[in-house]
Image 1 (cartoon, one colour):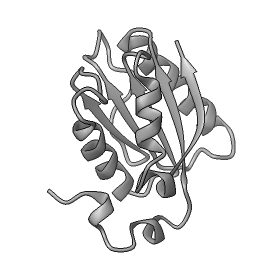
Image 2: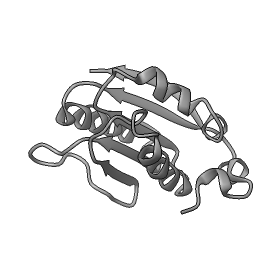
Image 3: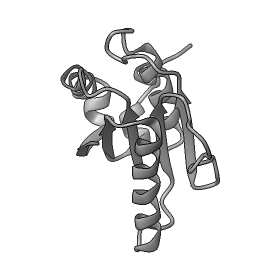
Image 4: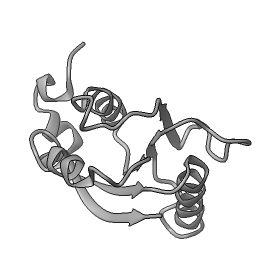
Length: 139
């Protein structure tokens, strides 16, 4: 499987760094609800036509608040610490989402225990050119 970093001119294809909001802690339901509320707020403002990518770690609880649509790429990722499993699952999922050229990315992770390691990964190539961490929210 090819990675985004192996894609010729990956940074040029996206042209500008995509804003990333990192949401951590709380239950899966809380992370999904927080992201859904943020998306609804953005849609109510002038950024409503933006294509958004959401990666949510964990198992859904009850009714799903988010679903794939024309404006939303949603990937639910099985629970497991991203940095402890070598970041492979996160990298593959994030690369797939970035290939769709979202205007914003939300990354919801279960544990805030290893956020420093996750941030370090996001600050390294190719993500240092593709993403800009705009906000971190701990629930």
